[in-house]
Image 1 (cartoon, rainbow, N blue to C red):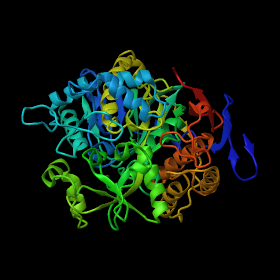
Image 2: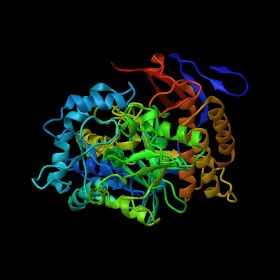
Image 3: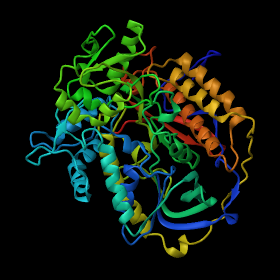
Image 4: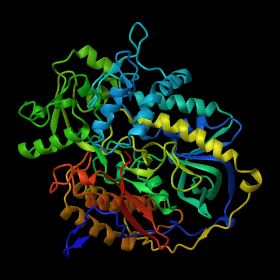
Length: 569
């Protein structure tokens, strides 16, 4: 590493670098002997598609507790998924084609063994969802309607109610989980930290809205906490996507991987007064054009695949074209398509746009990129195990190797199903190996973390400032100067904000957001190339020597180290 006094430039090597990040083991002080306790065989943190599918895969002879942060169990990124779920469901399609499309989109950083496994299992997992009650859209003959999205060479995206696929699938697993006698769903439970004893995860420290701080002891714990979208000003993510699971996994000693790879969805509705609603990739899959303010269809100038290029390509092209035309947005148009088909396929999007006086069958839809998905996260193996015994991670909180540097459209719900099932089964088997005598006991775990919370601090203002900083300094385009400036700003903020009071949920959110933001910026500064969702303006090309992963791990002294890891071939 070379330091010129301003920006830090890292070089590829196998040497471990200790960064200027320090994080306590636990966010608050506590002693488990002074808190209420609950015991469960398997603890699932998060209630999106991955978490609930995992809960349903656990043996019916074991108790499962699902902890969900919001009051509404449907309040997740999974529920917001519009486009659909990708899989080989057409007789003319092949696993090899889906595998190849995934590998190409992932910019040569996918784990091919994982890709092959997930793609091959896809049809079976979707068939299970249909058996559980999911109603996908079908043709008159009963065959599935299959759409096409960016990066796919075939029509292979199954969808439900036009553009409400995630909602339909989540409703299915919620309905089945509520009916399962061995599953208990606890709402408004904020998981502060994972508890470890003798190097093993043994449960979680939780703030329950009804009972205050308490302990959930678990034989096995599954993290399914979702993504990091709320770190950024412009995002399609649920308000609860604050990176909690990733931050608490780091504090518990789990390895994180590829934190620089944040996916910016190219087409997010951008009108005054609106939330940043997603305009699904399926809209372009159905033939929508991207045009600029003069009506010029520009994508072919940037990539031969035009509107059907992968998301990273389209996002960079849109940003470049907005700069070229001095515009704040570009536009999607479906005016050349059959209005009846468009209204059938995208009723939800049509309804959202109608609130702002936009008729998607004839009007231009103003869009620009926004944060959509995190490819990096908690490093896991083929079944979903983390590097901490007793701890599993699935869904967007995990880094499985499926997505590489850029997720292929509609592969996320597929990953949620495949890894949800494997982690549920794996955690169930591992829990069965732990005796009740060993489980039903209170471990001597405590923390004397000293709070430095300033009660006059305006947490919402600081949260907004963080989101703006991340959008400006670690957005679609990045460079060493901006990343270093961002890290310096975050370091200064952490001096007077780190550690919240016991009942301060917003403060805990902010600590997690700051920790994950620093990891993203450090990883982005380390990777001196442009690959997938990561763009470095001073390194515009993909570099073969950077066909590596970046790996973070907390050290015993509280510092965080990052090193590069060779790809598996």
